[in-house]
Length: 114
Image (cartoon, rainbow, N blue to C red):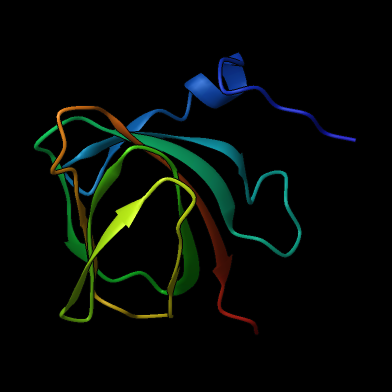
C-alpha cells in the first residue's frame, strides 16, 4: 500500500507552476502508478488562469474547493465544488478562477494506451 499526503516531501518536491497559473504538485505519478499517468492537486489563486493547452492524455479535473470557468474546445461553463470535468485526449482546455477565493482542483490523468 502506498499512502501519500500532500505535505509529504516526495509530493512537495514535485511542486511546479501548471500552465502559467496554478501551483501544482503530484500526489502520485508514473514513478508509482502502473496504469494511471498521475494524480495531482493544484491551487489557482483568485484571478489566475491555467492557460489553454492540450495534453496527450485523458484527464479529469475535479473541483475540490471554490469555483471558476472551464473552457474545453471552445465550450465555456461555470464550474463549482463537486464538479468533475472530463477532458478527452488532445482537447484544448483552460480554467479561470473568477472568484475572490482560491480554487483547488484534483487532476487524474491516464496516458494513451499502447
